[in-house]
Amino acid sequence: MHLVPVNIESIRIGQPLPFPLVDKDGILLAKKSFVIPSRRELDEISHRGGGLFIDVADSEAHHRAYVERLYDLVREDKSLGEIAGAKISGESASDRVAEQDDRMDWLDLQEVANSLLRESQPAMFRDRLVRLQRQLLRNMQRNADGTLFALIYLSATDTRRYSATHAMLVSVMCNLAAKEVLNWSEADQILVLQAALTMNIGMTDLQDRLAVQLEPPTATQRAGIDDHAERSAQILQNMGVGDQDWLAVVRDHHRQAPGRLADRTRSQRLARLIQRADMFAARLAPRAARVPLAPAAAMQACYFDEAKAIDEAGAALIKAVGIYQPGSYVRLATSEIAIVIKRGPNTTTPRVAVLVNRSGMPTVEPTIRDSGVKEHRIVASVAHRDVKVQINLERLLPLTAVPVSDRPW
Image: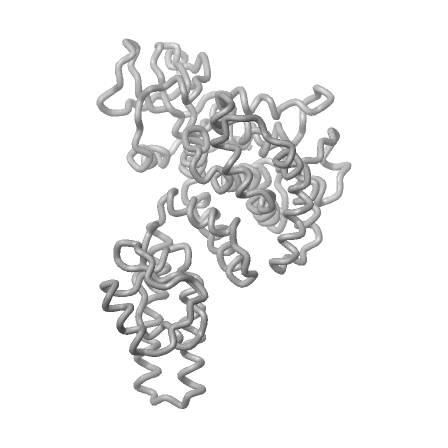
């Protein structure tokens, strides 16, 4: 939990709380929907907790509550001094939200995505979706390789928040392929991102349970898997999503139908791209009952369609993210083990950082290599489970920003 302070003046007396209030250590002071009956009780809660705090994932709701508080003051004919004081506090809180967004790390974004996929209130759902979408697009614009690095590494090594991480990875891959390879319109780029983020909203709990479950899915769980696409579309309608293409993409994102993208409707094209990326991400992710594939092998599995022909959507994904994607491990011709940090001028020659030397010992500092150079060429993909080096994600992410020559597509 990442906490941000809130001003006591932004809390509405006698109205259900739109978010839980916690103390400085994250201990619950007042649950969501709790009604604080008086200012005196609010003061007592604040004093007891050493101030009032909320989870960063709830800060959009706090800003909305602050605006409603201003309206209350106006309706109550409060003095300009009181309203101005509340406004200063509110603007400060809003500024903190913007600053906090900029400081969000990937564990924070996992929490935001997890909250989105479990949200039952339409207004909160829309706020969280906009916030997550904005942050993902901002990260991709600033450093697409770093975004891929973080999500592929987390997907391959961490079963916590499986559903949230999976949704973010699929959405980012699809957005990059739509933009950089398929040259889809900006509207289609945004829609495929939104649909991928929400495609499994009808089975979030089930996905997270299956990630740590040793036994095969039960009959009840299998039924939940089989009908989750329709259930997800229904939940989105209940959340206020009226875009029929969005709903159709979610309904069809598991549909297996080989063929050219040009021969499909808009929603079918987007659904096919998501289906291919979904397949890749599912094969990459660790499960308690299943060994994950190495990223290169997982990517190659989505390259061919159900008729064993080259799949246009799968090929676009490979061209966008590479056969050896940022965040995956490879073995070099020098016998060194490296982690891919940046896509290269073609799909097979990324920039890498050596973490294990040719003697099998961890390096003190990562050594940057260009795998396009013959002596440093990649000879094999390496599964994450086979690399025993512990890495610090935040320490390696800056390496993904080192410039390389532009890709030719």
